[in-house]
Length: 184
Ligand SMILES: O=P(O)(O)OC[C@H]1O[C@H](OP(=O)(O)OP(=O)(O)O)[C@H](O)[C@@H]1O
Ligand SMILES: Nc1ncnc2[nH]cnc12
Image (cartoon, rainbow, N blue to C red; front, side, top):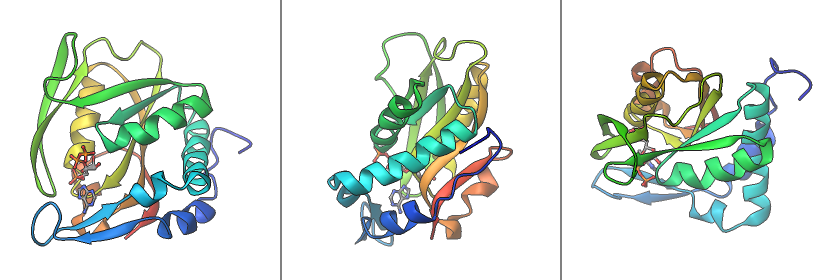
């Protein structure tokens, strides 16, 4: 990475990711092919390559804060933020954050839920990159984006490991700038 405008080469990370994701049929509901990242998480070298690619992306976007979506997003947001020297903002499932929150109900591929963020989570001037493992229908990402904007955040994008293109997540995420390491 040499400037804040350049896009990192994600091809090495894509190959590593492809070799460390497992399909689990009919989880958590019949008809869903669940993209399980636990093989990636348990393989340090592979995880390091993927986290490194996300960190390059975050630096390229000039991100100063990484927002992670509970729960799998946390596993990625924390190491990325540490590499970049950025802060972390947790976007949590309902009822987990202790301070004053904003809430957003949403639907995802296999259910419905509510996400929350602390009202004062994002200091003025921070450039926020949302990080998660999967973009499927886009419901989760759209809710996270809405919450962050409601806090006055400057959201520079969403970075995910995998995008399930057949579920058209980009149709629900409006102007959010999305980068996926792997498209399925
Ligand atoms: O694009 P969508 O259809 O909204 O789906 C994507 C979301 O689904 C999964 O989260 P899940 O709510 O299953 O939570 P988890 O991380 O706690 O397993 C995944 O980690 C994304 O956040
Ligand atoms: N098919 C899927 N696999 C893993 N996480 C998901 N989140 C939404 N859809 C998913």
